[in-house]
Image (spheres, rainbow, N blue to C red):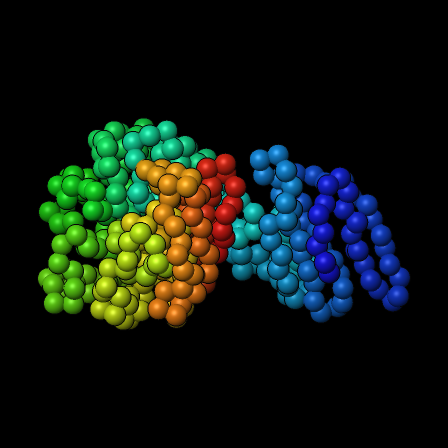
Length: 351
C-alpha cells in the first residue's frame, strides 16, 4: 500500500474479503492507528501522530495476523493486532508514554556535551515530562559553569542518587569524583533504587585506559562479575564514530571483546556534538553529544556514514535533544526500546 500526503481526510481500505471492499472516510485526529487487512496472513499498520501542530506518518510495521503482541509480550486483545490502546509499559511507536508502570520499566535518559544554559533546562524538562528515573551524562558538563549545571540537575530531581556523570575533556575529575562519592573517575556505578536491574561502567578516556592500564583491568573484572540485568558502558571519547570533528579513541579492539563477553547492552558515548547510532555485530554503540553547548549549524558535521565498515543506522547533526531508553524489567524477556527526542518534543529516531 502506498502512503500519500494526508491533510483533512484519510481514505482507508479496511477490509478486502471475498471480493468485497469497504471504504471508510475518517477525519484526522491527533493520534490514532490505521490497520489494513490485505490478506489473512499479513497486516500493515500505519501510525499517525500530531507533533508541533502538524500530522505526519511516523512509523510503519508489518505484523502477522492473530499473532501480534504488545511490547510487554502479551496479546492486547482477541484480534491479535497491536494498537495504541495496547496495555504496554512503553512503546516503540510514537512518543514514549509519560505514564508507565515503573515495576515493569526502568526509564533512563542520555545526553552529553551540555552547558549551563536554557537549552539544558529545556532538556531536563523533557526528561521530567517523561518521568525519567535515571540521567546519564557521557561527559562535558563544565564548559562554562559546572556548579550551575549540577544545581540545575538537582532542581529537576536529578541528584547523586539517580545521575551518572563521566569525565569529559572539558570536565574536572575532582568534580566528578565528588558527585559520584568515589575516589575514582571510572568503574562500576549502581543506583540503590534500581537494585540489580542496572549497572553503569564508567570509562575515563582522559587518563590511561588501554589494555595494559589498571583502569582496563578493574573495569574488565567489574563487568565480568556483575549480575546486573542491564549493563551499559559510558565514555566521553567514542570507541565508534563516523568521521566528524573528533576521531575514535582507538581502543575499540581492546574493549569490545570485554563488552560482549560481559553482557554489555550498549555503549553510551559523546564528544562529537551530534547524534549517531550503530549496531555493531548486535551491540548498540551510540554518540549522544546532543547537549546545547553547540546548537544548529554549530553542531559537528557528519563527514561519512560508516565507521570501520559499519553503517550508521541513524546519524543526525544540527538537532539538539535527549535520548530516552526504556529497559523492560517486568518479565524474563530482556529488551529495551529508545527514542531521540528533539527540543520540540518530536521523535527524531527510535530503536
